[in-house]
Image 1: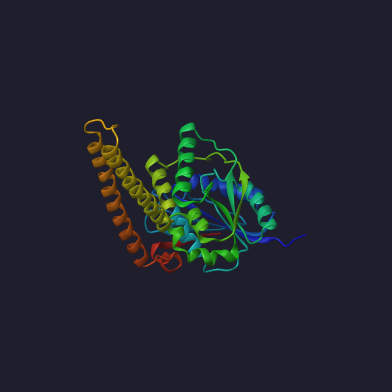
Image 2: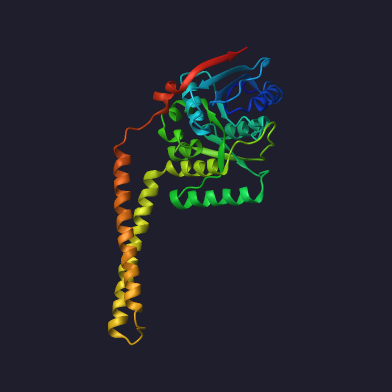
Amino acid sequence: MPEKKRLCILLPIYDDWQSLILLIDEFRKHLLDSFSSVRVVAINDGSTHALPEGLSTGPIEFEILHLRRNLGHQKAIAIGISYLAQETKYDLVVVMDGDGEDRPQDIKLMVDEHNRNPGNIVFAKRRKRNKGRSFIFFYLLYKLTFRIFTGRFISFGNFCLIPGDKIITLSQMSEIWNHFSGGIIRSQLPFSSVLINRGERTAGKSKMSLIALVIHGISSISVYLDVVSVRLLVFFGILILLSIFGIAVVVSLRLYTNLAIPGWASTIGIGLILVILQSFFILLILSFIILSYRSQMVFVPALHYKDFILKVERHE
């Protein structure tokens, strides 16, 4: 029999306390027999409601990191990762949402994949989503946009299993502050995925609005700000060259053929000149953005996470 491993589960929480209580029961049911120890660290992301009294965690170690203010799930996860990086006693760390849509029983599938590829971070790739058509459409649009701007594929969220020896590396990465999974893709750390069905929310209603979803998508692309800027530089550079070529064609047709319709050459020529001017100014702005980005001090979660923690609450 292989030696049982020590597991730590990291959950960002914003008022989903009832879901968390139900999740702890699921952890007892599905995980205690498979691991030598199970610890749950909930990051209280500025919740407006307190944890209900009478919580019983049983043999599961449980603690709450109370943040000073609401920062959003991505930053809460980065703080939790940095907090765990101060310890080295866990073999595996699982990051998951606390609303029940990430199912505890699926952790075993991720562990199986980890056993096949011990050095990989393992993500949950959704086989089936219990969402409406509008959500699926915008999610596909998000993936396509991410692919166009970054040249990389993204098909998973926060739910993942991380080998314990990768936690320190992740805590030193500024990219996970804006977008956790996008930051891991950018890190060049090896990762793989397993197909997993999405579960149902166990209690309450989702607090994710359309605006929050759009911001989440933009945050994932912002991890590749330098790559996106260079791609846009190339695009607008090509656009300028095509516009110059178009002007040359218009002038040639106007001077050397009888195809001209009165006024057409000047109209098209002015339009192409405007395209060139707009592209030039966009190129100029992008160049300044790249220079500014490269000269900024990098935010490292491992160095700054303590500034955001109000207190640590432990439950027996």
